[in-house]
Length: 316
Image (cartoon, rainbow, N blue to C red; front, side, top):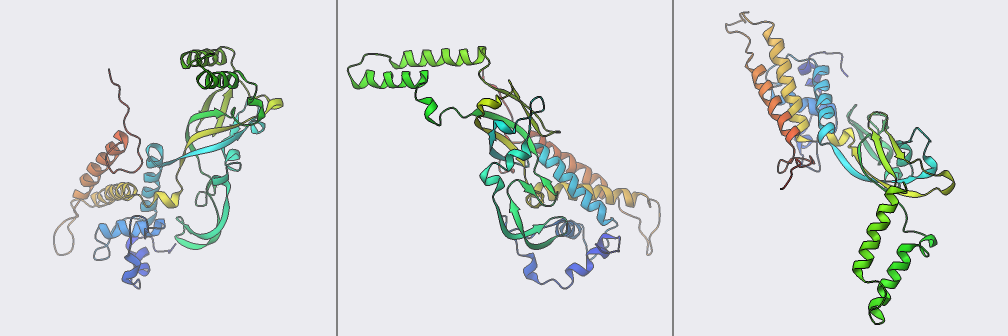
């Protein structure tokens, strides 16, 4: 980062020699690859380089960070299915989700590709993993776990189960003269099996702590009869993807307007050279935009708005 602390001074040298091709961009081939370029876009929206923007560059970077924090709490996630093995479970402590990333093929596969860092806005060759955020220098965080399924349908052990016996008799009842179990008997027995599983604690229940990133399963998995399972989870998107979201840009812009209005408000009542006074209208403009953007995020489900989940509703 330049030693110049003013946003306009900091960005002057980065754009003056830039060709028009540097501004070519689409939704999927985005030119915003880092904090510097997003801060540059915010500055240009506010009138730079024709006018000076009285905002510290670190303020703009922190505004972007605040936008990422809020967006990932409500909308900035991906839906992932993570492989679980009981041997990774620590009794009484649960299992950290980052360990399961290393067991899940599409989350642990690593390959060398050009990597763009959002923090430094530079591109270089690096190792990419689906479960690791290179800007945070940490594994991506799991927002919530929505399902846990124990693997019970793979392997020879299912051959002599009650479900297998009933399924065979149901099939032969239709293939060899309509005797044995019918579909209603099959359904009733399945309901009974499900009830038995719950009453005898054969079915695992789970809780997830998003702060510790640990999944707690009740009852504890039996290490002597370890099993494989699948966990459905919402995982935060990487920083390099978040800064491309239009909501992040709009929210950081609104916060920057608030910063700018408060800074100019310090000089209210002061006459400028040539007459006039500092204009602080941008403060109320930023507050209004901030409020509208937050409401849009909290409500969710707005057509065309990112990946926010639709609002819950009840019928009846």
